[in-house]
Length: 414
Ligand code: HAM
Picture 1 (cartoon, rainbow, N blue to C red):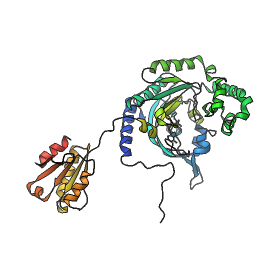
Picture 2 (spheres, rainbow, N blue to C red):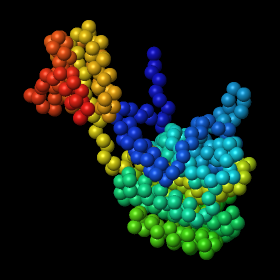
Picture 3 (tube, protein in one colour):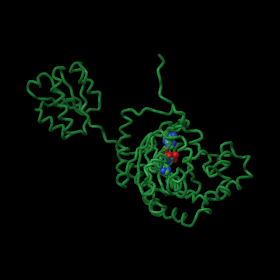
């Protein structure tokens, strides 16, 4: 029989990998709660139209990367490529689009991209959406959250870039001016940038072509098209957060999703290599009305968990582990009784019951190969004397026979 492999770009996360995952997820959850955010879980599948209307049907995400297929009822549905669209869909459906809410979510997202280091087809995001708040304090709160994440998770070598895309009108004016400026250079653009120029000119600013980057330096800057208050917001943010993270205004920063207006930002780290952005977000005041809801000003962000985990230098708490060994299977009932007492006493320790029916010697040999600190041994002799042996697996000479009460006491203090 041929074996079946996992899908390309969709790795399994296995045992040891998950130690750092859980630690980062728990830390993020604590940060979210400290900002009084409430969790929302939306489905992984949504109607394809939701993403077409929100992320934009000229975006790479919807054009080339979305996992869309027809269900048994011939409806086009998609695996979510991001979380914001589903959150807003849910808020509108629950008729919560006229009030303020502060939301966080975490889960898998799917994009059919070319897999490479830091880029997967199934990846995970943690996201935040502050809904119902006009430009102002919410923008400061959002950058404050970014800076808390960077500092709490001990990320070094971070660059946080911010820009302001203005409202729809200034965005459109800037786009027109960009198209006019680039008209004489049209033939020099590669195929990808030519399509961008035609369909979504702002995305040109994201070009990887160094020649075009040089040309663009002479071109119009969004700085001249956005309001004074927008420019002031950028400067104020820079001033407010300069001590907690390296914040840089980059007038060429644009984002890959169409729904943004106002402030946009991206945090990247040189330690990540080519795929260096680990947080991206911004304001999207029109998304709710684009999806048939009320006018709901909003700002949000998403963190790429694979990338964040790979650069976080959080101390990964060592797992505390003890192996429970019995000499014969007929003493199992007593062993299970004691083991359960121990577990309910101190749930921070992993009590690994050896479930094989091999000899005591073989069980001890196996225990020595694990990362457990101690073995608790219940042999025939111990059954009679109602004792238990605590054997250190770090130091071969350390071994004591204690009463069950003393064993409980020992376990509680590990
Ligand atoms: P995004 O910039 O498309 O924004 O994604 C956010 C983060 O997800 C990226 O910075 C990156 O770390 C991670 N990411 C994206 N694609 C992949 C991939 N293929 N493999 C691994 N990681 C990836 C959004 O998704 C918006 N929904 C953010 C937002 C929320 N804006 C407002 N609210």
